[in-house]
Image (cartoon, rainbow, N blue to C red; front, side):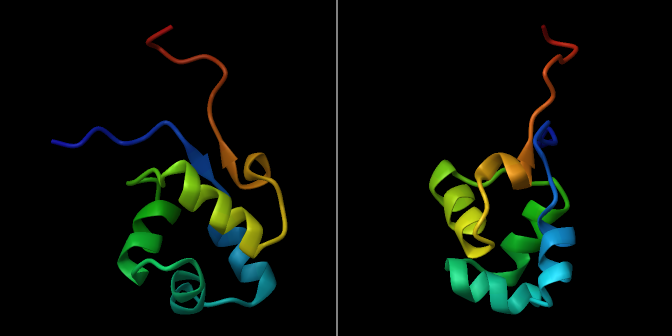
Amino acid sequence: MVKPTLVTNSIRTRREEAGVTQADLARQIGVTRQTLIAIEQGKYSPTLELAFQIARAFEVGIDDLFQYPSHTSED
């Protein structure tokens, strides 16, 4: 079983505010729509390179889209 990622994101909100479809964003960053859905839902963490591509698509910094808790139960 795959452990869900602790990384959260606001890609869906940002994408909807920009009026961009999942298909359009996926095509722009070079992934499938299914991959983008998994990233938006927190089921998959993108590579650092892909995270930069997504952030650049919205002209924001990575930390404007992705968040990681400062404390976890594993600390």
